[in-house]
Amino acid sequence: MTTITRFAPSPTGRLHVGNIRTALHNWMLAQKDGGRFMLRIDDTDAERSREEYVDAIREDLAWLGLSPDGEERQSERLGLYEQAFEKLRADGRIYPAYETQQELELKRKIQLGRGLPPIYDRGALALSEAERAEKEAAGAAPHWRFKLDHGEMIAWEDGIRGSQKFDPAQLSDPVIRRADGSWLYMLPSCVDDIHMGVTDVLRGEDHVSNTAVQIQMFTALDAAPPRFAHEALLVGREGKLSKRLGSLGCDTFRERGIEPEALVALLARLGTSQPVEPIAARETLVNTFDLSTFGRAPARFDDAELDRINTAIVHQFDFADVADRLPDGMDAGAWHAIRPNLEKVADAGDWWAIVTGPVSQPDFDDGTRTFLAKAATMLEWSDNPWADLTARLKAATDRKGKSLFLPLRQALTGMDHGPDMSELLPLIGEAEARARLQSAAEG
Ligand code: GLU
Image (cartoon, rainbow, N blue to C red; front, side):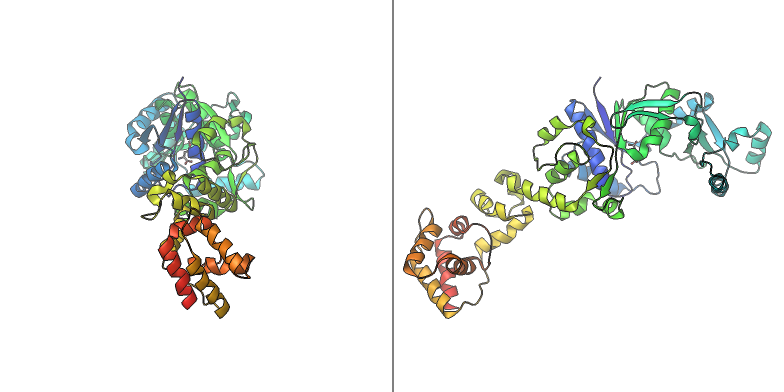
């Protein structure tokens, strides 16, 4: 059976680092098995869903290089949910409930006050036909609950958490549909997983108890449940589920100069027993992807680690990888000279501006100006003009080390540090280099 995974975001905001991780792992799981990775837009909540976020999700996935092999939208599948609803209702697995939010809240408080778990008491199920008719006559519109089967323990072998067991009597019958007819997450997700042929549901461990409920839904809908795996949550460096982490959208990473390869390399292995390394080759990450290496402890996301990986990845990029993002005129030689000094690809422009000039030189003292005037006359073009120039100046003056190199660098680049001068000088070119040395000498 072909592996089919899905990523099911709600279009209520940009993808954040937690969603990106889930999308990536589902993509990798499908890739590794030569299967299919589907995008499912969970947009049943018409009020909170926005078209702009649907577009943003597609763009973000494209930027990350996680192209889906197909896309479905829940808002276009309402007929399927209706059918499933009717079947479950006919089978007695769905019942109407009339409690208001306040009534439910009060019940919870009483249970908690008595030290009991806040499980729905099935009050609505106990209503007689007459009581129900009375409520309807008074204008009360019901919401709908799925009736869990309390007969047997719910069990599954989780791809990450191992053997899982839930007592259905310890779970509330979930509300699956609101009084206005709109759908909550639980049932549509099952219906879609069945219709889309999803074989593997890989998601965060905040869904573990949903899985217990959904396993009963699959069975009630005469379908075999897919395989499930729940990964430990992602937390900030400080170990807490930080708000900031949830607000770190794909767009913020992009604007910060983070390469998709860096984000992917980090998130592919964070929280697993495999080392996080700056691996730009997707294939390597896919081939080593293995759910059995995922740990149960929360995965810690550290921005500084992301920056380190990003820098290492930028240093691996060939000219062809970045050519379309470099300033006009910047060629492979320039990229190789400048690359080791970059943290972000976008910074290449700053160094390229130093090559093309003008540069702002510091004021030099008289002795240094004389030295720079000498440098201007001694500059000769060769295979390695920098090595030749500095060798000649060393022999002709009493300068060495920093007092020899620094004024030259400052005159030629306007900076105290930067790329290797033997690579930079040929890029600046003979005439321009001589002109810079002369102007620095003249002050
Ligand atoms: N839209 C749901 C969520 O974002 C999907 C959960 C699932 O993967 O089933 O939490």
